[in-house]
Structures are given as C-alpha cells and as structure tokens.
Image 1 (tube, rainbow, N blue to C red):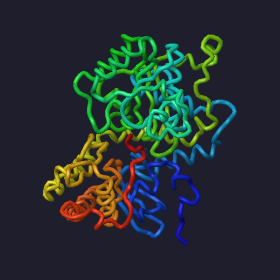
Image 2 (cartoon, rainbow, N blue to C red):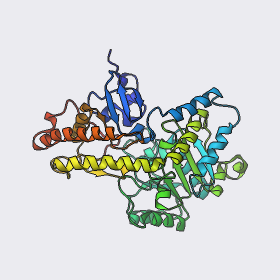
Image 3 (cartoon, helix red, strand yellow):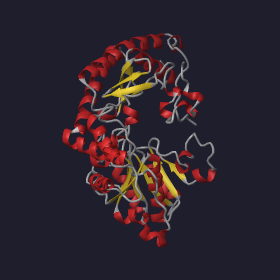
Image 4 (cartoon, rainbow, N blue to C red):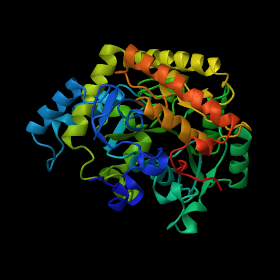
Length: 424
C-alpha cells in the first residue's frame, strides 16, 4: 500500500526542506543509506546530494561513528548529572573554535541561534536584532520577519531587521535609525555569495563601535569551509557563534560558543544579576550525539575531511560544468557556492529563476539515479558516483534544452516544486 506522509505529518515531513512540495512527483521515501548512496522503499538506488541537509558530511552509516555511538548507548544515554563525555566533548569542541572560551550544547540549530540572540540582548540590555543571509531560526524573533509569519504577533517581528549581504551601507542605516537599540547582528559568513573584501570586518567593527555583538551562524559553513567555519576560513573572530548540521555526521548536536564574559551570564552564578535562563534542554547532551560529535571531529582531523570535501566537490563542479557548457546551457543552469557547498540554479528562457525548471532538472536527475536538491557533497562520494552524476546531468540537460525551446510543462510529470519561503 502506498504511504502518504501528508496524511500523517503536517507538510509531509518533519523538516520542511524534505517535504513533497520540495521535490518532483514520485520522489522516493528512503529506506536506507550507505556512504553517498541511498535506496528507496522499492529498492531503487540513488547517488544522494544535499547530504541530509548538509549534516551527513562523512557519509551515511559511517562505521566508526556508529561504533562510537553504540559504545555510548551501552553505558547509558542521559543521567541526572553531567556525563564524562560532556566534559570531553566541550574541551574538544572548543579546541576547534579559536576565540571561544565556553560552549553550550543543544539538539537543534534554532535552539542555539535563539540562545545567542537572547544572550546578546541580556548582555547589551537592548531589544533589537539585525540579520542577513539565509534561514536562521524557527523561533518567533526570526520567523516573524519572514513570509511564514503565521501565528507570530507583530510585536516580535518589529524588533527584527534585515539587511542585504555585502551592503554595509544598509547596516549602517539600521544602526543610525535605531541608535543604542540594536543588541547584535547575526549572520552567516557566506553562502552562495562570498564576502566582498573587508565586508565581514566592516560588520564586526560597526557592531563594536555601536555597542552591539557580532554573531556568526556557522550552521552551513561549520565543518565545510573549515572546522570552525567562515570565521576560521576568513580569519575573523565573532563574539558568539552557532553550529549544527555537520558536527556529528547526522546525529543531533548543535552548539553555542563564545567569549567567557558573554557566555557566563547564562550560568547560575550570575542569575541574581542578569536573571537569564539561557539553554536547558533535557536531551541537549545525551550520549549518542555527543559521542558522534567527538568521533566525527577525530575523523575530520585524521583524514583531512575539509580538504576531501573541497576535492570531491571540485570534481563534481568541473564535471557538471563541462556538460552544462557542452549543452549550451551555461546561462541557464549556473553553479554557485564553494566546491564543498555547491548548489545549482535553474533559469527559464527569459533567464529568470524558475521553480518549474528546477522541478524538471530534479525530475530528470532522479530518473537517472541521482537525488539532487543541490550538489552539496559528502566525503563518501566516489569517482564512480561523480561519473554517474555527470552522465545523469548530461541526459537531463537534453530534456532541459527541449523545455527551453518549447513548454516546460510538456515535460513535467506533475506539479512544480515550491520554495519553503515564498517571496513577498
């Protein structure tokens, strides 16, 4: 019997980016994965990109990570006092983030980004937040400033202000419009767009000259650009930083790290002064995620995983770019981002971003055994996987060109995908 998650789960998935409306009709439900391959419930095999929303950086079912987790399980998962693993994990994690003195673990990225904002507000005594970049949190302070603001009182979003990446003058204008009110700027160091020379430094300096904190969200860049993410890659030290995704090869761990003088106001010792309840989650440091974090970091250091991600991502970029160029579609299917964080665009005949053409490309890749919402790689990707991907693109782009010359809907099996966040 065909299973329909939309009848059971709002949105058809527990993460919106995995939902049915993000994929072409007929997209598989995954039964298992190993390395860079996954198999659906019908036994069909795919090369997988996107890597578990960028969380599975070593590959699925990594034997060393799984062994470390199994060992931890046998010793117990959650206790009434901190476990030795928590001490080891904190020491190890802080050794990878220069400039950070303390860390707080949680399970979700939204938990720690919201905690960072709360910390900044408590530290500065200010209410407003400035941000730029991609998705930051499901919590009211951020999601209320997006197009998915249902259920969020306007009072929350009135304190949150966005500015455009690489447009320092927009941030300057925000500080000028709200003098003495902005607690922090929270942003990604880069995504598809890379920082113009001096931009990140200008943001940091503008924050500090106005008494605000500079927070880097390293969910995407942490463990991909470098162990510590954009801050290490670009040589800039934030006041606070947040991590998640690739920390533990798919196991649930997120982290808030920063300078001691800021972080310690979330401790019990300072409760009379600040009355700040920072982060207290039942499962924040349960043993499976913490054990996976420690082992994953060990493998990163031992095997040079950062370099491996760049290497294999570079092979994908070069191979796919060649077939795009050969098909005469360079202007219609642009590749963007670093090799380790590679994504593709899909433009229509008017050279405008197109969800129907995105659907078509994903559909045709899927037919050829490649599941690719992006081209974000894992270290498990082999040369054979890359070759299979390149050939899948070669065939898919033949259909893409026909759609450009005619009607894209003639080539789609069903409805178009839709962005999680629709434009205003």
